[in-house]
Length: 565
Image (cartoon, rainbow, N blue to C red; front, side, top):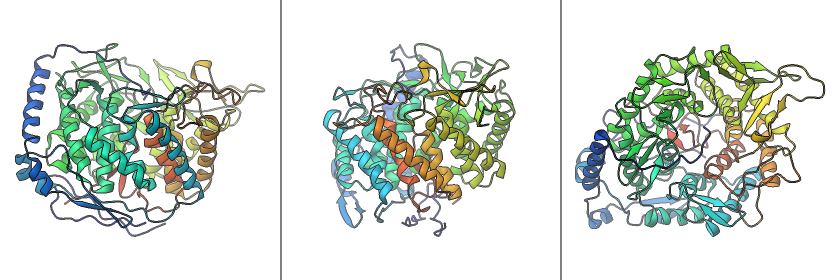
């Protein structure tokens, strides 16, 4: 399908427009510890600013909002917006409403092929469990037929909104939209992790707005974005990891006074886009300051960054440890994707990315025995470790995306080599599913495979990184073998993680096909990312969310690439 070109009138002043569609061509993530502390002066100021913003932004009357209801279409069907619960301020009507760029809506009209239908079936089965046992809650526990809470914000539902739209699941989407309208409220006394809530909730709302044109999701995104801002009120402007969206109290996690580098540098796509849509530059300014400060810091090694940064001093901590796995991974991803999002004009981002890839090749790249698989290890105080998180499997896709957008051809060569490795991390396991962490043999040993797994690392959390990179490699090369590899992985998910009563479960042991040990948890990213990337991987239509028109955030939520106004 070809996406309709957006209207060009009324782009936000100071922010680029969305480009027209081109002609057809061929972290360990997990809940942070919650802690409530007395706010310091900066945070109190943030609470006051937040309260003032809320009073302004929620002052409009229901009658005025009712007059602005719009109509969106879905494959010819007409859906009238219901009354939204939160509305822009009168000041925003003057300064912002007129400037909001129109969303480029996505209409999926072609029937999916056999493999895509299998993904739709998998989604419906997962959704069946969520809807029956965990509706409106953060996560499904499919074995116990119950739910788990993290933020209490319907995390799985919000994360899956754009996936439902892309897969053409009209009934499921409309029911989820009704929940967002009636039940999703952010005025609640709860701590959220800035990074996780930005990529999943803010990213999911912004993406769904762009794909549907439904202003409900933009209004929710604006409200949520304002509530995250107190996290940035630190002495260094490096944000705290946690913020209470009801009180404005922001703080580090209990176990450290630091934030992780990946978390503070992987919220930029979403905050920049929120500024572009609202005309309010404070969101972009906050994350741009983080980018500037991290760029100028000492403690890097040929572009590679440490894992931690102190929110008071603004300096890196735990120096000398370098990884592309948990706590650092998406820093590198967002360097490239911000450059693409902004129309390839922010050369500092590109330079930092290219330097980092050279640092990877110089310090972290190695080959395994006996098959000479190329892998990315870790460096700790000069000592190399042949350890590779499954999270690192984002890298082949990122490299391929960069090469597609004009970076050196050797980036694509490395992408292909690493993609083979990530595939083998799945294939060499008895279930066909990758462990959370793999260790590679670098010395020839008779009877040993390239990939070995320690007992503490052999779980699988339904993560998306391998299929994410398969999507990019297929889109950028056209090689159908990447679709075949993804099909094998989907089959393994169905065989070893599918729960008959509804849902899918992470498992404890990828090396035991007889008893993989289901863990009774379906992460929101299984619906938000894993199944979405599989559906897109199996499509042969390069115009379906083209990588020339959209950039995906690190939770697989597509946001439009800008062009200068």
